[in-house]
Length: 338
Image (tube, rainbow, N blue to C red):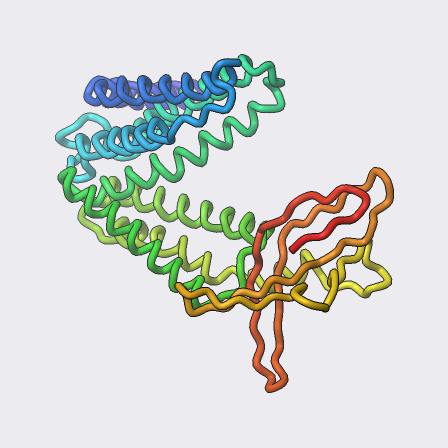
């Protein structure tokens, strides 16, 4: 038992020593990150003041914060690259990776949670109920900023190479996602997006973290590089492979007219109730169909999560709009909706 305790204490001291060394090396980036986060928190606080009601500060502080944190994480890894062998540095590879994880948690995750909870306290919200969402936000930020920046920094040697990798990965993911949307064409369902996001997060985080660890453990091996590349490709592939149509039918099944909790029918078929317009600046036609919702009982509100329109021509040709999350709330009494 005593040997085990000494071993754990030794690991903790080594990790903390590397953590302190990393913090001193990128202290300017740490200062920039904390300053930018303070500015962002201040702008959110201004929106709650009476004189600031209706203010909509631009998102530049948030964008600047993401850029600073990405650059800080990149410099963290570039300054201690995987190619540095244990003989040239006292700490072995696993202690260095642990120190990098501790660094991101300390200088990205913890300040973000503190800033969010400070706003919650100022707004008078419940601390216990908002602590969980604040931690989730910090975890997502670490995943998509810290892990991503560290992964690409582990396979590059210079800052300009890291920038090219980041830009190339974003372009590749956007292109694959665009191709997937064009090929699928069945729209995104809210529940389907939740499933896809969760799968993407686990796949990307698992492969990227494994790639970073593999790069530090075996810098001359290509396993880490392949794992990081697989992490990038996994995001659009999961997006393309998620069965949104099956999820749509499962979440929103067709029901008979008699079992419908409320009814929506055509408002009328005479005159210009149904209008077909041909925009001059586009090749698509726009059809406007007015609908009427049957009166609802008192105290009942119908929530429309989204809509999807299907059309079939006599020749068998079919068209569908895909899922459109343009829902809203309709109070009791019925209403017309174009």
